[in-house]
Length: 335
Image (cartoon, rainbow, N blue to C red; front, side, top):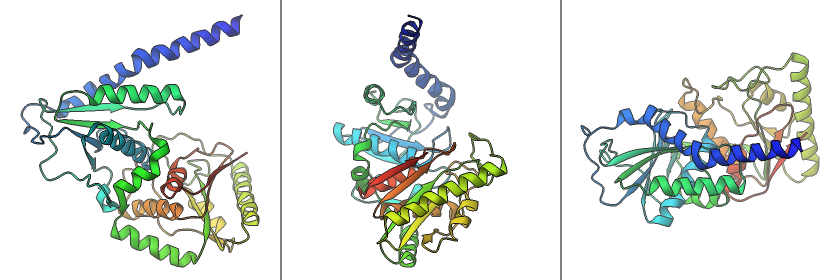
């Protein structure tokens, strides 16, 4: 009986959160963090057609690159369905156009087009629990529709809602293509790889002691456990090579330079050169961000992609979204 009561209370608490608290919290975040940027002294919006703008300008936490891209494509799909103009204002910690350029749809803002006049523009904030169940997706659709139906000329959306996951690759390709500097590095690495390949990705965060996550979500492992984790991941890569004898290279991406140095000892492993930095690392430089996008597109062009998750490693969505760009097989290797 006690277990039934506990389950009921948990379900009730969850429903109350969906029905009341989360929407209230979103509006509270807008009041506390965004409203101060909007007043009637700013020039009014001049667009005649309602516009939704995805915002990543450093005013609040925006998440990693995969989360940002997921939010972007979901908002774009909403705008397609509701005949709204869609724009992207991605200016922190870098300008998105330096790495991704418009493909089939021009999402760029023109000079002076973005308005912070409180009468014509309004900020919206929406985040996610990380749950991918249907209840969460219904909630995200409902809140998106409610917030984006507000009668403003411009709605500035700080969001990592992602209920259009299944169409990620299609929508991404409608919006983006690599900027020339990114394409040049993609081509150079593909020449070095020299043929068909698979990719293996790992996210250790702080576990190996050589990467600093801005939010500090993992503790560094003792040295013996670090070595055991490295050896276990290398063993999985070796077994993958046995499963794909026809491929020439396994491209390995990771947030750990230490791990990448170790896998270089395997003659069939290829590591994309460059610095490593989290997208929200304030001191990240252009070289580090360039590698992030090159990693993404090299993964996208693979025959198949794999993510290793074990021993406290982070369940990243980066390689999964990259695999969706060209819709090739993606597999998680756990345990």
